[in-house]
Image 1 (cartoon, rainbow, N blue to C red):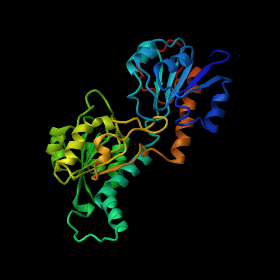
Image 2: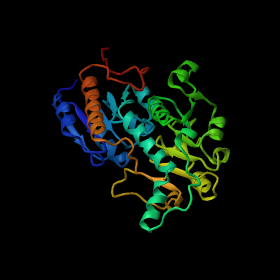
Image 3: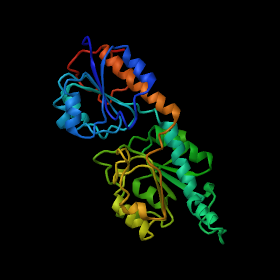
Length: 337
């Protein structure tokens, strides 16, 4: 480890470094550079000589990574790594670490909150109440124990959502290439291919990673395969759905409703807010929350602490808790354990 390592903390205004993480990093006596990292030039100017980069929502493209001279670790303060070019980091001998389990409970809770709000039509009921109006019919209201939820991606969050849905008596369909019959039986879910899951589900929850193979996996043909009464609940990644097609499906009544916490059409983390021109913002049959599913005081503290711990580990010569690219051959020589 250099006598004075340089640690670059991106997204320092979006989510400032907290005291706990700051104290942990201080054990290295580092030069700490805190920037937002809104573009590649800003990131490179700060990070070209850095020993470690900590990141939340900024992009680290291959063009930036290949110009890093001393970087040993890119520490993701969170779960998804689709904004980091993992292949470029691996070629460069840089370890990429994330925290795959840090937001599981929060995202599962928020997914159920959106599902319940859609099931009980809370947005419309609130509107009626404020207008002094009582609904005239129970049409469209169903007990959850008579409904089916389809979960696309059955990792930690998918399993946590399934357990919550089962507690309400829902039938759970799961689609994941890694899910075995034994695991499905243990979780009391039914394995379904994507077409069957879409056709049979009252609620569809995409919770798989954003990969080239899953980007835009839900488009107009898939929405047409869903029930007209179906609801899309997306707390995974906005880009899993073609949002223009989703808006068209909602506008034309191809599906009934969407409850969304993630978006490809806007940068929720943009400084000063974000535009609301996309068609999804103009539809009444959409419930929107601003990428808040992972939010809690507990998860915020935990993710900052563990991401800082990963940096301390690597710059002290150890492997971090969870390398996303375990096949990497680091240009330095960390020890196992």
